[in-house]
Image (tube, rainbow, N blue to C red; front, side, top):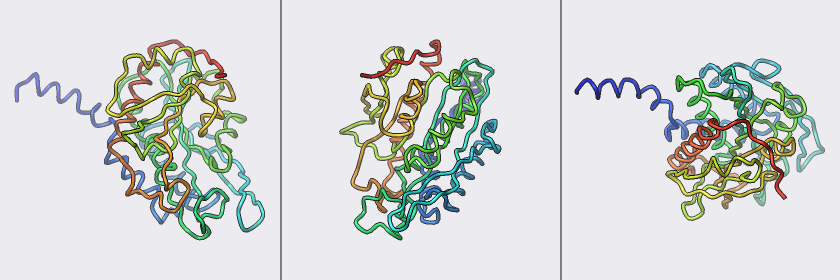
Length: 309
């Protein structure tokens, strides 16, 4: 091996090692969406275990805790169940901060809760009660993406011109409760936020459809960011930013958003949304596309929010 090649491999290996990895994505999803996690229903022990798994990785990546109790921002969620009356459950957001000493911050988020054992009212199965709703695509896939992007930006040895706030939201399935709680009780001033990236169901890529990216119309700068961007997956944009997932809560606060989603499928909100159906390699390419867009956006000043008619 000549010296130039050896030097190239030495200097690029650490960065390449932190790029999104299909193997790590699959491992995260298999952990979060295993039968042992019993569907990560809000208020369950398994939901708390999922939160602890995310916090453990935030700690591993060296992110600063920015919850109200370390990485955690606790709140109370109202759970609307099928068989018994409504109840109140403990829930939490998990929040890690990458401080680059910048004036403004990019938010990257995904919800980690799902439907538990089918008692929370939104299962589409004919007989949901007692069945584990693993939620591999919805939304272990998004959490895997969140962890991969957190690792990439925390470990790439580059001091970016923006800070990053990585957030795993609780109780999204109950009505965006976690993201709305954060926005009403922010641990970082909202006026310091540049834009928000939301990932919800990015694990079932269909090459005929491509990955949808909502929120294209929520900032004056998005067209310039997307210009000439290519990817290893097919993608298309949609102007709207006020639907789909936790991005809608940020849009309501006039924060520009992008929402990544690979589309619906027959296993949506059913016990059959299992890890074996995930396309981790395609998700890896989706995350590489996100990195391209984020990196281009960081070359620009703070975005100006534009409402979508």
